[in-house]
Structures are given as structure tokens and as C-alpha cells.
Amino acid sequence: MSSSLDKLKALSSRLEDKIEEKSKPISKEKQTIKKNDLNISKSTKNTKNKIRNIKDPVREDNITRVKYLYEKLKIFEKSSDFNKIFMYKAMNLSGIGLKDEDFGQVREGKYIQIIAITYEPDKNGKKKAKNISLGYFGKAETLNQRLKNEIIEFVLRWRYEKAFQNVAHYHDLIEKVDIHSDTLF
Image (cartoon, rainbow, N blue to C red; front, top):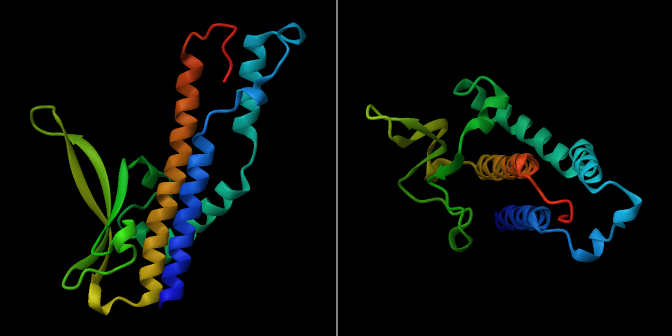
């Protein structure tokens, strides 16, 4: 039991490290491009386009595994279009801890559910958080260890893919900003 939990903790740690690595700014040493050799604005745009077109094997493996777990955990019964599960703002678990201090621990007496969070306007037009159950797996005490690990893995891998999508979104927003030709990042 603890070896599976240790594996999930290690996976979570590696995923967090990868996310952190992807979000770090490029060092000044890596930005040494001679202004005389190229047109800065065209070069920056071309570089960004090349970055987006690079196939990231980590991301590809992650999305493949998310699709597998989406089907295995029967998430499709509540959300029939796989691509639409990434429209949710967040995803969490009910009945299983995901914090460092209680990672993978089931909460006795609780029911296990995968919860998607979205924001919808109320009758006054104010955005309100709405929880949507994507999967119900019964009481915590009766949960099979393997199934528990797959549920945790699904949520973590969904969050990882969501982080990749957010990074791409911010790249797009930065492109829209009028950047001076002497500014590189």
C-alpha cells in the first residue's frame, strides 16, 4: 500500500517540478541574440511559433494517460466530450487528501468523488462557483487501493494538462502586448 502511495507522491512531485520548470523565465545567458543579425520582432514571433509547434513527449504521455483514465473511471458518463473536461476551472477530490500532510489518505465516513469546478452567473449576473461531480466511487472505507490511486492520478494529470494549457494561453496574451523591440524573454 505504501509503495503505491510513495509512487503517487513521487509522480506528484515530478509533475510539480515540471510545471515549475516550464514557468521559469529564460535566463539572460540564453537570450544572447545579436540585434544586427535579425529583425527582433520577426524573430520573437517565429521563436514563439516554433515553441508551440514542438511536440512535448511529457505532455503527450500525460494526455494519453488522462484519456485512458477518463474512460476507465467512466468520466465520460458525466462529461461525454473529453476535450470539454479542460473547460473546467479546477478539479478536486472529495474524500481523499491531496495536500502534502494527508496525501492519498482517505477520510473515513466520506464518499469519494471527482469534483469539477466551474463558474456560472447567478440570477443577478454575478459569477458563482459550481461543483459538478464527474465520478462517484462510494464510501472511502470500501475503496480499492488501485482504484484510489487511479482516481488520484486522474486529478493530478488533469491539473498537469491544465497547467500546460494555461502556459500556452499566457504566451498568446503576451504576443498581443505591444513589446518594444529591445525586450526579449
